Amino acid sequence: MGISPSCRRRLKLVAAVLALQLWSGCGAKEPGPLAYVSNERDGTITVIDTRNDTVVDTIKVGARPRGVRVSPDGRRVYVALSFSSQQTPGAINKIAAIDAEGGDVVARYDAGSDPEQFAVSRDGSRLYISNEDAGTASVTDVASGRVIATLVVGVEPEGVTISPDGRWVYVTAETSNTVSVIDTGKNEVAATFMVGSRPRDTAFSPDSRLAYVTAEVGRTLSVVDTETHSVIKTVELPPGDNVKPMGVVVSNDGRRIYVANGRANNISVIDAGDHKILATIPVGNRVWGLGLTPDGRKLYAANGLSNDVSVIDTSSNRVIATIPAGDGPWGVAVKP
Image (cartoon, rainbow, N blue to C red; front, side):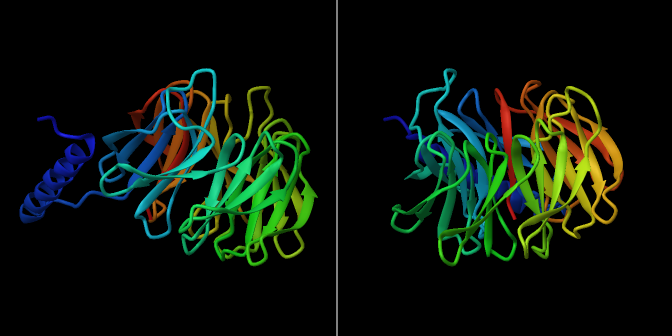
């Protein structure tokens, strides 16, 4: 009688726990936080142990996985699944929920048309999802699985990020060059403002007072005052036709901003005080999503054309490891 995939994963987990107990007894370090990398062309999630930068699992989710997030309690990993001509078989227009402990897909939520990115509320009860084809953002209740609100946002919405205080969700729209601001208390669009051409992603300062929005075609980073939802400064990124700003993250202390420059194959490190570029870090081909470890010491960058992940030491701004991933690494999320 065969063993089901779910049982195999549970056995694998038991083996990992026993191994951890043996390591602890020998004075070895425990595994670090896990990083999850979505691979959009082969329908998988690559799981990386950030302590030793090794791949510890590959989870098959099917379809085209792009946006990926970890729930605030670390128990679930969510990934957006949509359609592409290269997709592997699987459910589309869904947000899949993965049990972080066992690695199984435990739920799928309706996500509207062509979900690309999404955000998870601070208490884990809501998903805020961009519907690129429909020009809307969906708000899904996790407990019931129901879409409780559908909001009209910009044209071709893509990036979705929630502020650390949980008050605002910023949705970037790549064709209208706008950011729609969702008030999470009311589930309403509270404001809309213009940014650079083809905005892709947003990151907030730790105190939620500032937001940073990348513009792929404009080759800029907009600095936004979240009290007024207005751009207070536009930072020019390095010149060059291949510079296509994509993912963005902010250091835990708020002093550094990291911008993935797409086909330029590098990352810009920007001082959050004077907005000067402090360093340019060469990475793999077509860098897209970024993720920081909870201690802020490592930055993980998904390289979509070289099919690997660059690991950057944030103290030296140097690549210290390159990890093979699946086909088409896109997003990165690190377990808190």
